[in-house]
Image 1 (cartoon, rainbow, N blue to C red):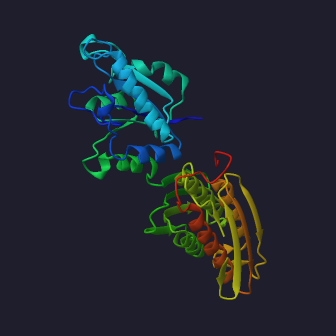
Image 2 (cartoon, rainbow, N blue to C red):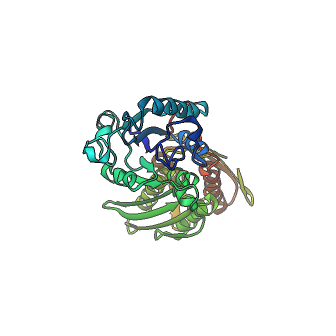
Image 3 (tube, rainbow, N blue to C red):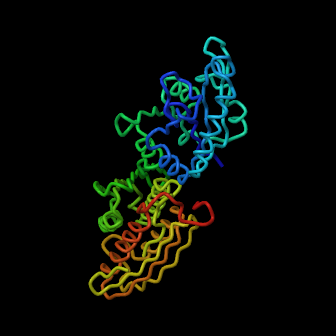
Length: 358
């Protein structure tokens, strides 16, 4: 399992940096604007914190170690009083002219930590207030952010939180087999573009219902062996759509997780959904006809089963009615509405006591 780690500078990033560049007395300690709520939200999103700081000339006559340590202990206690802890604290006391391998942007301070921990390089980052912090990020192969609390939103602590925790929930999937060639793109937070072409008109209409009522963007195209029948097209589209939804959900922090009844004229569909990470499917659908348009009704159950398996969801669907078209459409709309509730972000917490939804 990989870890989301933030390597954070101290002076100018966590606490304001005084004009003499040394925080060596308690009356000089001021928190950078917005840092406490930002770190609390980042911690809620599963981030670990490592402090990495250059303290030029620490231990010399002009910068006594005892003065620094008194203030530093106060800084750490201040953050701990707010529920914020640092896994490790690395401090380089050397001057730039010393040529040591541990002074930022060099990575010597972090060698053992990196060897003992498995970083999620796509989500971990370096946060600081100087170009050396960005260079450290580049050397570590991570994203880098510079904090400027008085500048634009993008470079303040709230902006950094947004960049790290509220990124786009988008996924693009391409799948090719001997029977089908499918490309799909989903955007869970953009209810705009829906463009679907599978070669089966009624199936396109049903997929549109899922996206429209699910409140997410969906672009999907499929070239399948329709000269044989619709089986492979319907099944493989379900696999691709479920996979795309699962990838776009990421670690699922903040989602509603559950979705629940949809009437369609004389028909009534009941849908229960749990984005648990565990696939399960049950369906009760006594369709009066064998097909609607070019799509056989037996493929409705097969579609939802394949969707549940690739999405990693428990999905229960039942429908009653007299008109097969209405019954099928009620099922697809109901699943869409259930997805709308389940994928909606409601905060930052992971909706489980297990610690993971996978």
